[in-house]
Image (cartoon, rainbow, N blue to C red; front, top):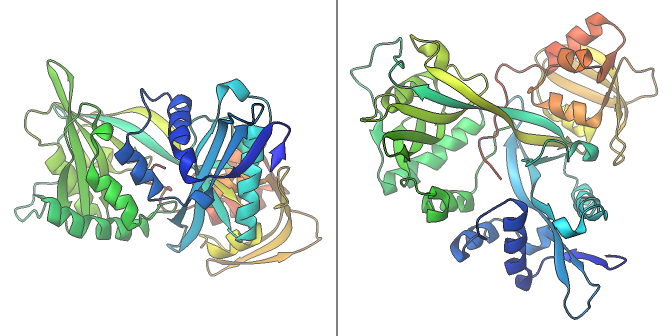
Length: 408
């Protein structure tokens, strides 16, 4: 596909060195990924799922000025059902070629592919918060960055005499961690499942990921695991940085945090946690953990509204006429949504709507990250009356907040 001197096509083998350089420039890396790290990425994506744009002003020396790709992923939705979907990633446009429509050109190409493949959703992790709403994406999962002062961190429950938390060796880690993570995925909306190639990259623990920190240490529990690195913040300050902690039961969560908070010669721990993580309530001092940041960890785009609404489970029976606007694609329309026994029957209708919203708003509501009342207060969702708003709010609310758990 050509647009003046800009040519879009699918990636080929010889494009990858330039893709790595473009990625480093766009995301402020000190240097491009090394051969091993690049091989890890290539094991997770087919060239046919990568689009590149070249400036062909000089036909003898075309210059790569845009790249976008997607991973074929699987995500849990409310009710525990897992769906296949594309995860948009590595999106960048050269700073020399801004405002020329390259981003829209690439994303439109991928949307057309996803629509041909009848994908119901697309997800992404956003480096900036103002880029993707124009394409119908809405922030759909959040996470806290937490620092735990171990001088104050004492758990309320007594230490069990039969704790099963142990440090794992390489064989134990490879044998048990993927299975635990897969169990965890079913417990959280928005959770992303991992294939073997994802685990291969994680277990390889490449030096480029350590950035001066220790290699990963793993703590194993039958119903959970945690991994962490040791980091010397300064000559006099050493902390533990929790890389991952995933638990299937509350008991596993408590036991793993008890061990983490008792690490020798460690005055503080940093971790990324769900926004509704119960750790503060398990401590005798509520101020021991400090939230140092909150960020959107995943954005969702509904591609097929009727199918998406039919797939998930709901927390309240109700019926409403939903009108969705979509200025980018043709996913909008009007549907009668009848929720009964936690499932929705969705049919096209020409009846007057009782609720209206943009596709990005519906995408943010879908997993339970936001409540309908919040969008109504922001004047981004309209309902015919208060009882209708309350019923929709209750229907879309989830017992647990969505967590992606995997950066891509």
